Length: 232
Image 1 (cartoon, rainbow, N blue to C red):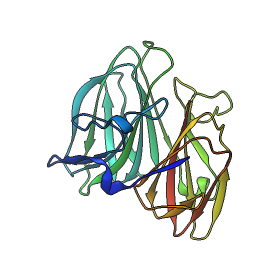
Image 2 (image 1 turned 180 degrees about the horizontal axis):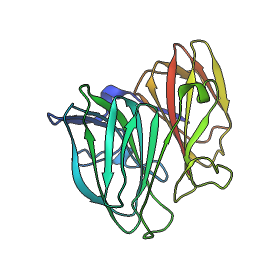
Image 3 (image 1 turned 30 degrees about the vertical axis):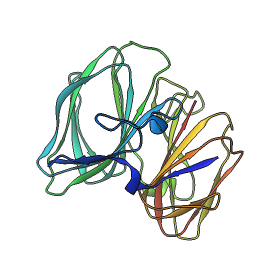
Image 4 (image 1 turned 120 degrees about the horizontal axis):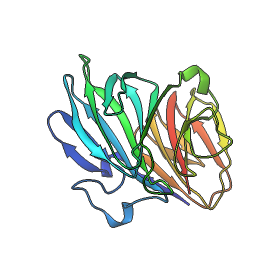
């Protein structure tokens, strides 16, 4: 099953300093049919204006994966981490028993990012933050695992569930195959470009929910950058 969720149909709004679209129910946006997808609880498409950002606020019992698509943000948390995350960077905030953090755009251009929330298998635990950079050349034509709770993905940022967050860049006309467990929940979003997924057309920032598929064939219609969650 492949369920298209075009960008134009997503909830969200314009808050002055923040433009946000929600692939799943989030904040004031509620839609029963888009409440979650397995352990995937949220996928927010955010644009943060220059000189602004999210002030310090708390989280608990969630893994938050941030993929910076364009621009840069400064992450600051009460664990002592203060890091500038550029485009192509991925950070994982495992909130555990509780953490406070802020995200600020100190650049002169907007910051564009995906924020993905995944439910951990257990509540509590020590909060942690991990940041990694994944250059496009490393994931050209092949999936690279950004974050994972699976033992085989030792070079990825750690998650507290059996979920995986992956990325791939494709040149126009290039294809790649991904063979998932049919019992898992896949969700893909092209950060840029357009792509065919088992023949279904998706443009930049569209969402594609996938289940009960033995194989996915992704064929780029133009140069594209794709992020995917493979969740229990």
